[in-house]
Image 1 (cartoon, rainbow, N blue to C red):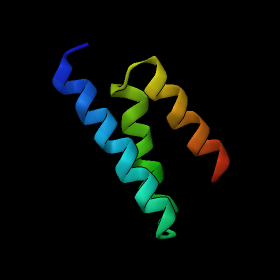
Image 2: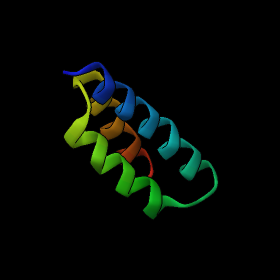
Image 3: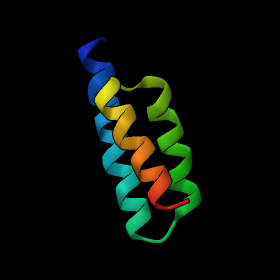
Length: 55
């Protein structure tokens, strides 16, 4: 994976967590879906966990 792509996915995970903390579950879900397509295996696993936690 390209380093820039990994950084983008990491940034999106942080952003999704912030959205969840603010109560914007739909916004967080959209960002987490992007991480599932763009992230590495660890990032995808974390995105899945966050999605399941706030489903």
